[in-house]
Length: 342
Image (cartoon, rainbow, N blue to C red; front, side, top):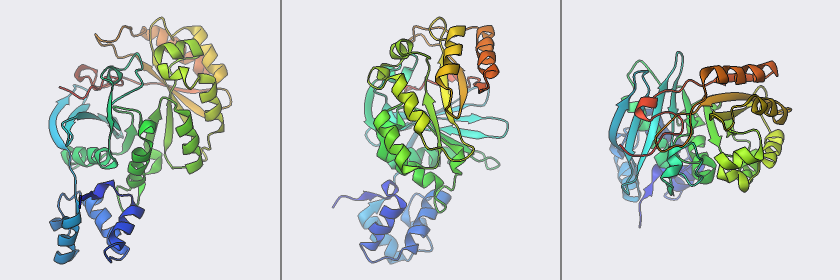
């Protein structure tokens, strides 16, 4: 019988798994705490379980880990971690320090199938989805390397890949992130970023999973968005905005719209004015992300003056608008630069 990776089980699945060989429900709570709060890597370390129970667990299941390969650190303190998976594929995670936050950016896929023109991950194509355990193991591996006086405060699923294209595993991982017996993150501190897969967004709306939603928008009209993001041909901007308008938000929460600014493509004052119109009626805030230039990307970053004027127009229209300062660019850790290699 093939052994089960115990980190691929949701809390309910873990309870059922243990019940199948006669164990009580409270045992699942003990195991969750050992796995995610203590971060143990073997059943032998679970000292409040009997030796026999630990042996039984090791016969039918195992505790997976990631193989850490390489760390790069930027001058601003951003750290990029390279991990190898069991099949030899590689993924990257990024730890971004701020005044009061330490944000971990997680990958959900090896590569990406959506080919956004400003993103290096899309250039390597899609290889496979990550398992829930491989998403969660990024948190555990990075947490081990964070100094004792600091802790990860925020999680963003906007590393390599499209989280909603790996729907089941991304949501299972988030469930364990917020679970009181697992990671215990506040749902307000977890953000899932998507290019806007409409069937999955509609499914997400029914599930009412507690986390923050970010939409990778990047254009104010259909033509420009289709040019930058091929997915717009399948799920047009007008349909995406309708889904956002009807998306059930918890009180005092908003959808974050991410807007990568590209010189001469989507940075005009007309674009800013169109954004005001199309986002009207959606509780939202806007993150402006000046393009991270790279030799493989045929675009340039707009000037600071242009970005500032663009921001001012949106703010005058009543929106909260943040220009996201790009961190870790010199180590290819900034937005859109992850490639899963040295």
